Length: 368
Image (cartoon, rainbow, N blue to C red; front, top):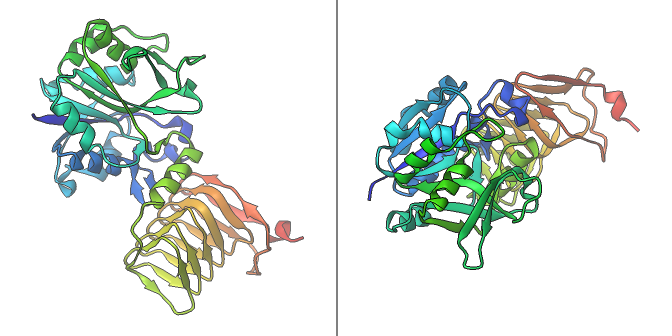
């Protein structure tokens, strides 16, 4: 049975400011790969070739980055959402593309362990009208929540409840048949002024449709906030295949799961994994610690970086403290104004910098 994919990539990502002032949140890389690209690969690997991408104000940037989808062997169709009025509204505006085909809908900023091929196969061969992926979470107040009956069937869905009656969150992966078209046309806006996908699924349940719950056992990260990005980065880095495709000199050490991409240079430095060093990056007289992703064309000189994401073309030069638990935007600069001196032991910085930021540190402030 033919299935299509639908990726929702229209959000502005306000919770990720300042990073998303100048970049679509779906294009922020995790382990040096934009989250959107990871989602496209997951759908492709499930055997789906026709994928609609719902876009908003960042449409031009997303189109320029993902193109027509040919690099992944898929065909991308871009669907401009007229206004950010909810997930069900995005489905409503995608109905022409979807037609009567079954489809999987995937939020474009979610990172999920493992593929979705078994889920797609199960749904495509079933008589279910919908399948939704659930995950147990510690605090369900920020998610759509599913309440199950004693028989394991879904009884009720609630969007961001103040007092959740369940810890089962909807993780942003949904499968539907054509019956969702009537549902999204029938519901009314919520108190938030949006057409909620939870209301559309509840409509299916209330009208006797079969909605199958699937409880995901692996990790899942909603990359909506900066620390979520670092957590997702940790998870993905733990699964990388180590490789040294760049240049590592004899004075350097590579420890643990580390990928060094083509054109990268590691000179008199230590890289401890899990970590990834992107193409044409230059690490000189420095230490890169676990949980770090250095994107392409980055320079780290006379500095120490650990548990961080450093985006392309940024420079970290002569920093007298370890940069830790940080996200550094594109083409940013972190350095000191005075001449180089050895780093002070035990000092650290935590930074969230947008693109093209400049941080100049006073070395004296780090001296004991």
